[in-house]
Structure formats: structure tokens, C-alpha cells
Image (cartoon, rainbow, N blue to C red; front, side):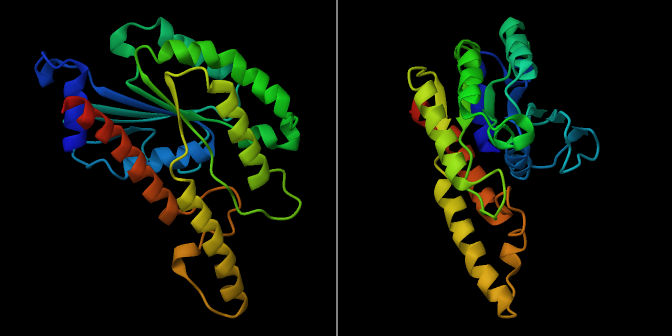
Length: 251
């Protein structure tokens, strides 16, 4: 991929490609970020991919990795659904690691598990935990591109801990908490896709009642995760934004 070539060359422009370290993307968060991870992998050519585990389960609650020697690429997923010591320890490990072991891009987001009754549903405690990891993220931003992935609205069923209203409140709290940390980017450019998906699911529900069916919206019964059609567009837009930023810097 031309984009990956450009990003790799940006690491150390004066060093031959064969001597540069692999380009490392890390996705860290809950199952919604895991969706982004898997959709990102769909954009990567399968020349010599190796995965751990092999195969990678789509509902895996463990860390996962994909590597490609030909592309000099490493893409990781870190299962971290809650802001806790696991998150802090992971970020601190990157800060203390030598440059060759640090990720180039850190894309993270964790919200919805904090909304669950089993996890306390304490919005202000969530913001407190976010405040605690801000300095570490800012430090990471000195050597990596750090992007907080705001979470998308969801289909709101009755009697459910997670709702679009809550997600919006958490997203706004994140913006307020990170607004003075200019090196940490907040990415919410794909909300329009998720919103259209939710509207489409409402239409589908009416069509289903009438005996009609649309393959595009077969995941509408999943109240938490955005459907593939919308999410694939969101992930493509995210990659385009990453690549276009580098292209602008090179011009």
C-alpha cells in the first residue's frame, strides 16, 4: 500500500527501508475498538500476514497481533475495556520502552463498559480515571500519534445501561477533559455514518414487521456495535485521514 510506504518512510527518511523498524499501530479499548481493529485489518493486503492467535476470534477478550514482514507492519489490539491499572501499566510501559519498541500510532477509546451497572455507572469516577491517564498519554504523544476514538451512537433498546444519550455525554466529557492536551487528537469524524446506520435500522425494523428484509442491516439486533457497512466507511476515512496528513506534510 502506498500509504504504508509513506508512513514507513516518515519514520527515518534517511535510512533505507530494509533497516527501519516495523510500522506499529495499536488499537486499545473495548469491543467497539476491536471492531475498528478488525476493519482496519481488512484494508491490509494479505501478502504474508501472521496473527496471534491464529485464527483471531472476533469476540476475543484478549490481546491480538498481526504482523507482515513484507509491509514492515505490526497491528495490535489491546483488550482494555475499562480505564484501570491495566491501561496505566500498558501506557507507562510504552513511555519507558526504547524507541524501537514504541508504537507509531495509538488509537484508543473505552467508555461503554463504564456505563454498565456491574461497573458502577459512575460518570464522574470515569472522568477522574481519565484525568489520571492524561499525563501519560501526553507523554506518549511526544513519540507516537495518539488518537482518542470517540464512540458512536447506538440503537437504544428499552431497559439497557448503554444509550446514545450516555455515549454523547461521555464524549463531551472526554473533549472537555482533553481540550488542553493539544498533542492528543480526538477523532469523531465518522459519527454521520453511525447515525445513518441507526436510522437505517429503524427503517429496517418497520420493514421486518411488514415482512420485508435487507441484508445490509442484519446486525441491527446488536444494540452495541455499529454495523459493518457504516463501520467500514468509518475505518477507511480514519486511514485516509492518517495518510493524507502525512502527504500534506511532505508537500
